[in-house]
Amino acid sequence: MLLIRSVATGPAGQPVLASTLRVVEGSGEQRMQIECLRSHISSGSKVFPIYIGFASAAEITNIAVAPAFTKQTDHQQIAANITAEPVRDWQRPINYDRVDQIAQVFNNSGGLMPNPVLLAKNAFTSGITIAPKRIDSTSYDTGTFIVNVPEDVEDPAQKPLWILDGQHRIAGLSKSAQSGDPVPVVLLLDDGSNSYSSPLLANLFAQVTTAATKLDELHNEWLTYAFDLGKYSAVRNPSGAAKQAFKTVVELCRTPTFRGVSNPFFNNVQFNEHRPANPTYGGFSFKCNALGDLISRHYYNLPVQHHSHLNPSELAAELSHAYIALHQTVGNHAASVFFGKPPSQQTIMQEAFLVGVLARALFYGPTADYRSLLQELKFQNTNWDFSWVRTLSGPANTISKKIARNVLEDALVQGTLPEASGNLADHLKGNGAAVVLAFSKVTPAGRPAKQGKEQYRMLRGATGSHNAGTTTHVKVTEQTSNVGDFEILDAKTVGRPLRYKEMERKGLILSDKYSKPLEIVVVMKHYGDLSSQSELQINW
Image (cartoon, rainbow, N blue to C red; front, side, top):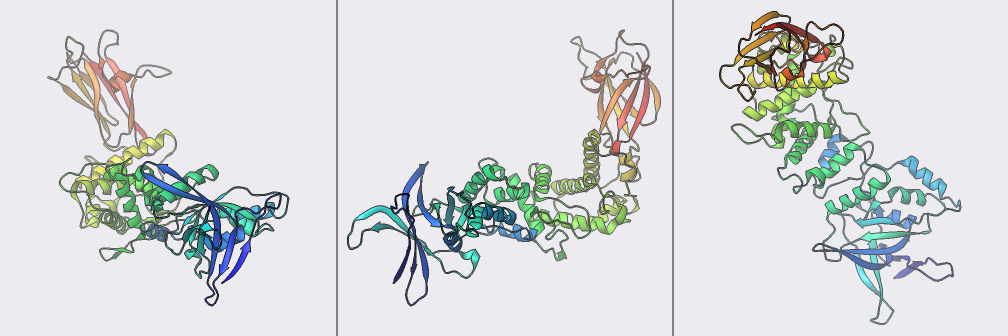
């Protein structure tokens, strides 16, 4: 056996911990040895061995690789990777500009990189051995250990060690004049304790990388999902709603067909920040974290009615088939809020449609024929060109989102159009909008009595009157689904309007402090910043 030793020396020329390359004669096998000190950390019931030594950047490059995806990795590949056991390619893509900067800075410029590199065993490889170092021809241990690492691997992904922290440092230094200089290494290696699980290593990676360069939001989301961290931990979220919801997103992205029909979302939910995602028919371009939150909030976090929650694959199939049926039913795709290009398409309406599908699945389970359902709701006869919208920014965004979700949810669950509306687009504009006032008698305690209530429906565009008599407590108790917000104002006030907030909330008691009759106007706010009003004269 031929021994090639690489010894690093201190300022006085004294040897320090070094790396060694052994070549096994006859076989051509190369194994790198790293001489290390060992200590351990005890936490709870576990013991974590830690080895510290030195190796050059060039040597580390030969035996270690970062388990990273690339900027070109497909969304469906990431979705498949994070369902594998062990999880594959879970680190961030390497930034080659940063590598070149490091190489330039440390190219014999008088600087040095003393930061240690964090290494761990590659979960997909074997062959690493650890043994105490002994003095030749004796049984005396030196107190140091030899970490013996296979080096001659053909597939870079099969290198025996993972770089948990320092992939840019190692790549940059290996391209510089300092490629052969010693670099401190910290090795997290089991010696029979089985302490270093893949989720633990991912958690450590997330901890150390956050202090340096924060992970992008999509990477952070699927990384924490893959390793049951954060909100995906069973300890933090015992219901498992977040886990089930994100698994639905994973299935939607990685499954080519559902029930024998091509899935238009295959490879078209965004998991990779560096690649766009565009479902087959247009629109509905969701980031994996946003879609997961939507499904969690509107499905798995809610109780079902007469059955169990669908499993993630079944729910993904529902979303896929509903999207296909929507495309088959809606006309004028190019100008529609669902499939048109910006500025025609509106994310609010796309999300509202999915919320409606989730609500229906919550009530009824799978729907066999979404196309018939949408035709019953006159989707094919509705003008989905919403160029009439004034704005979807600011307060109008919140109001429009609330209205769209309420309207689509009601329609898809009930299977019928709203009363007094021939189609959903007209309803969103405010067609048939109304606010209902309840008039009650007042108890001695000054509260509304439960018995003897009267209601008055203030319809959009109407002007009316109501004699309250002795029912002098008045408040709003109901509004139609196309009213996202409203204000009750004094109709006689000139200039800055007087608002009757009590009537909008807990209720207002009619008394002599108010002019008789009390004239009010209700301003109702609809989708896209449209509004309408209704006037009422109250006598008592």
